[in-house]
Image 1 (tube, one colour):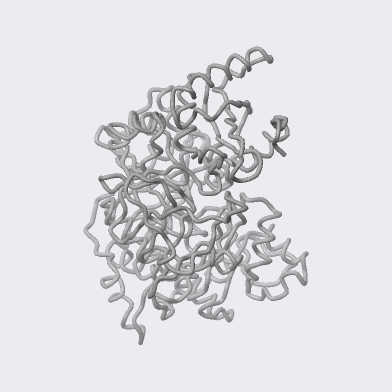
Image 2 (image 1 turned 180 degrees about the horizontal axis):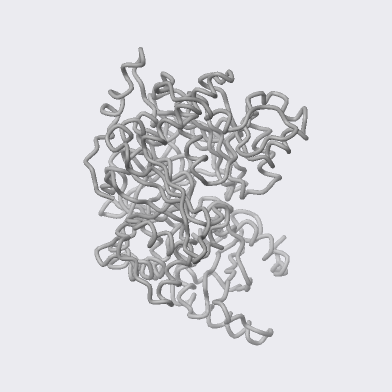
Length: 587
């Protein structure tokens, strides 16, 4: 696809729809309007459909013109149903053209999209829905059936759209909404402060919480990501995480949705990813470290090169250097892997390239320096402050009523990271008690506490040392997960390790749980004792790991539901406590 110069800035995009409005407008959907006007025949999305008689993959495609008009029809249909700006609608649709179109239709209508990761399981999904109380569901038939069967549980949900066949429940279908002539643009008069979406955290540490995104947050995210990486219209992006496809359409970028279960990225078939990259001449790709681990290994084993791929983005957890190296070996020789850092509440915050990691910081990480996540984006302010936690429960943050109560630390000293800026969200709308724990008021805005610990170096880079909740606080000091685990991960038989603490805060017993490499499980107690002794010897060579004397082995670590990359250390701590008897004098 030829590259076309397109100005998708806020001012330029707004000019395309401003004649239809009476108030200043901030809405990511206006960038889609600008893209459709500038490159109407360029492809907005490509989705795999099936295979022909020869086994070759076939694809559905839609242009920016048709996509923009489709979202207009859907937005108009929602408005005629009675959906008003601010109406909360739960969007539960599989990654597809319909999913992206519905998000933009909700943006154009002014409705608030509720986005919950279905991978968290039925129990947590229902709990999140109960807390957020949607006024309607835009969902696949299975979800609509559950809604209808639950009856009074979702009695307030009156605006319901079925993406697929509607059976015994009320509402309309997506085909009924879009089955009308295009009559012109639809765009609610939203401002930067108006609510745009409620996106739930994954719940990997603490309960899933509904994060309020305003239109200004989304709009600034697009600007920051586009400008930082130099993303141009005409880029063809393989999106292995559905929400990234939304940024693409706002930047004039083609979204390719791969054949994969987005809720289980660690189980992706790498051949499907390679196939999509080759078939669609993909130039950029986004996915979790779990995806690129499998794709990189597959390409190295099969000696596959992907010369069209020049930019790879990976987020959701720290990306191991070996994953960066394997991907760098198979993409364009001038290609780069970038690892943006952030959280659901604040994204993006910082970024680092594979060249900087492999050429410099990885060597320091291996000796316990932590994981360097790079330099902050231009719109971000950040500080490292002394960790403020509950005296009795070190995993729970202590509230800070103002920034004056926080002690800023000098470069090189480990503390908790706080950030603020236009991409940083202002509040949780469920589990609202966490607002006092995660936000620090500082007129006219607030700082967000990332829940991460680490330090700033002399070059202004942040080195991630783990989650606040995962620190192991012993009677002799505090141990941090990333520095300690990196040291034990150097053993050739260790695939990955996890530091957990047993016992009460302040007197915890540090334990390293190891997941051995495939095919290297230590069989029998003698083999486990030998491997533990080797790991103990490694630990004694470094001051930060000297306190660790206990080692356990686990066949496969539990991980987060969203990216399948973050280790669930809480689960491992419970597992370890059942296997290690208390030491003398410990409860």
